[in-house]
Image (cartoon, rainbow, N blue to C red; front, side, top):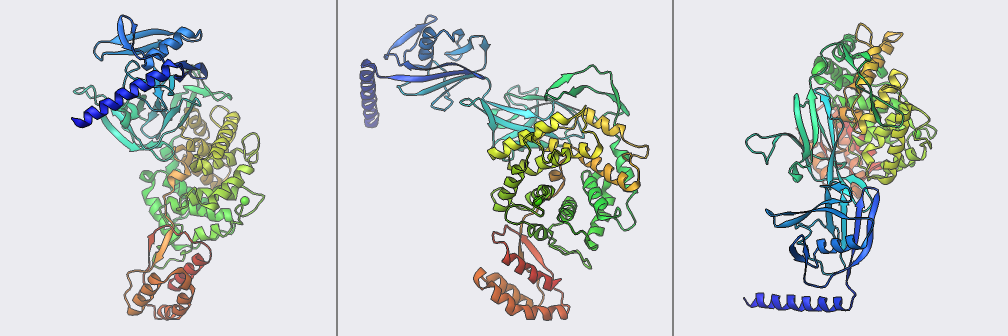
Length: 601
Ligand SMILES: [Ca+2]
């Protein structure tokens, strides 16, 4: 009781002090009212004296937000509260319309969304009040209508009302819901997923039906509608829209009949070309076919098993940096480690491919300073191999890539590279500079698009990689384009069988709706540790390695190299196991670790 009295005393003192200040005419609040691009009011408004005012026959606090708004309304010609509604059930006023905009006004005080209505938030002077029209948060869906075979990318965003832009929202869960007939206030969650640090969640294999897509934390309000239908059953369908170069959709009447690409038949063609040893001929064809087949394991399980065997047992013969990068993409698509830490028995391919690639970094860029494709694919590979956006090698390479971007947004005026470049940089899109680069590149691709394609199969496939990375879906017109170029045997038409394999692989990969990054499995940087040791000597070696610090590492390794060689000679059964964990130290220590492993190979 004593405390309450004390509080009341302080409170009354506070009121009397603030009242005094007001009497001297010094108290005011800042008010900004925004409707999209337009600031319709921005000024300081005097805080009325304590007391009450009458609105619609009701008394409200003269120092409430509503009272201040009412004063601003009276003093400004730019805005007017055109519909103010009182709800008996809540005992509160609600600003329904300002000017001609209704039902979606939000307000903040000092950048906080109050939990009380505008007539019940009492001001004390000096506050910044912001009133804006439109939702506080939103979700974007890559399409409102997809088939069960397509992915749905959902992006969570929040409105930055001070700058009138939408920014990524993280830390929330996206849900696909359906109404619960027994409980109108709580929908049934069909699928949920936390958003990534890019504010995105990707859903696949969504059953046929209609859904509302929203944010769990917002109690699924507002939502986007989603319809999921079965894939078109007949070989023909009608185009429902086309893209114009300005980047916006225009509706066209469903008059153009196009051939749909037959995915199953294309897979059957590709699988039919697999050789007895599991390969598809030369490395380049094998690698691209591997990525394509990995995009849909359900249709190519046996084929993938043969590829795993082939790639585990046959030495890679590539020489160029880009050969290695492409090959690693294939390995990772199959779930084989690019650090090659689990060589299969009798295998010869126990090579650390990531090391091979990283060695080609010259401090600024990868490989040839005149080329950017080697940099693009280095970024694509490394982001799936445990490298984070914060690492110097990633930052420098992305800076190099951005420095090579043309004014028109392309890389090398080239559609293919621009598509791949978007995919390489997208994971860094929290960076402002990268965001701008991605926007420019996206604009370039849109400008070059002709009715859903980019002139030829490979350019269309690579452009799509960029488009998919940005969270968009493959359009019907694009599927139609691939369909028009499909041969009777299921392949993409080409002048020889190798090119058929190559082009069909490109087509299948991009039409899967998955990016290379999504097809590739993720690997962490390994920390090398020898385990499952069966001999005393190995136990000693292991404990020495484990206990050694970096400073004394070299010495210890040299010391134990000899005994390790002995082990090899004796062909003891030493197996190795890697515990994935980031390695911060690079360079010499990595080479050293490799040396240790070459001992056991
Ligand atoms: Ca380069």
